[in-house]
Image (cartoon, rainbow over all chains, first blue to last red; front, side):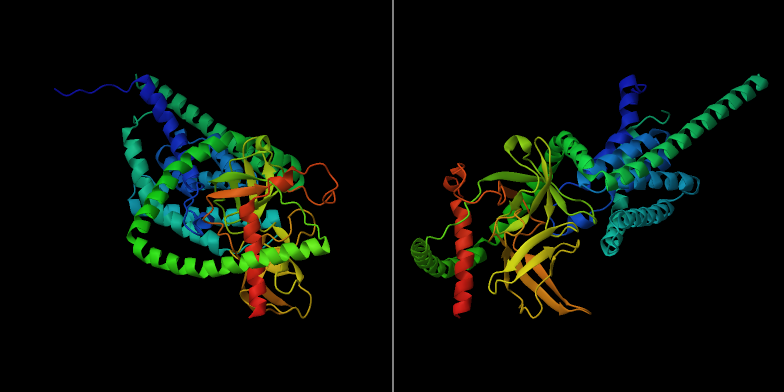
Length: 172
Length: 321
């Protein structure tokens, strides 16, 4: 006998907050001390990867307020200029939404390519904002390494998030 | 029926476009808010720091909790590594012990000699500041800012500008302190400036961070001779840092267009900070011996005195060679 329970109210509520929760955890993963010399300067932009994934797969569950909140927390925790990551992540959300129709329903490779373009755009935007904010021309090398690492780790992040989202009810 | 369906579709489309409009509007408002926050941070730095310190207090337990699995994993890997390298490490440590025993006898001899000369000259030392031990709970996670978060704050007596030292030397100073957490500006940060002196020659200089791993020496007098390996200690000028804290050693000297570029490798590796000490240094407003706060003398960390002593003796030995 096949048991198929309809999604309960609790499950629906939990599923609705999963994108926020996982994006928040991804942001934390990029900040906590890894203990690898020099890694913290170039740690992958997990939050960018998570926002891209959720905006493409469940745009209604990733509103701008959540993106702004995660960015603001990243600014506070990483001691950068307050507003820098809030603005950058909003740019990521906007770009991801505009790319969504090209990526949705396509192969993973195309999605990865889309993410790559967005990560480079986000890293460039953060670098430019920081240069203007501090009035100094920062070396672009750590930012480029950070972008490259984010692109490299995206399949792993996406794999985890796909498994989580497969548990979520289709319509929310 | 079909008209009803069309009506439903139109209603659905209207709802979607309204939702879309709402999203666009909130996106624009939030993007403007982010820009305003950036501008506010540029102008109202002190107030923004207070807000950040208060928010860090709220988020610190979360950060501390989330860093635990990584720390456990790290110590696990280190344990395995130590187990497999124990024989080789034992051999190196025995060699090091023999070398340091020779240094210890020289240090003790110099300590006694120093004490004797000081009593003869009636020389007065600045009292050693008491300290608070703290654990590093958060990393910078950004190519633009080099700071770490530690788990002590105002409640424990931490104040802005207090110097912070690692196991081997200076790592930076407190830039903001909340109730239970504080932020340390590392030597490599763009905004870090530390008055230092070359231990051997005594030349005064300023160590300035530029977000590179090794900070740079500035304002050295023309003709000052600097060699790779020269030790750098704090000069005590400016009153923020006590004098003679080991900072680092000259790692590179290269000729630039206008002046030489001298870089320092800090003794404390800022990427491997586990525990640090916040020195409750009160600056140099009151001359030593004139205030009633003599407690600083009695709580002086012996370990730190030994470090300073050893650094003095090593430079003396180097000069003697």
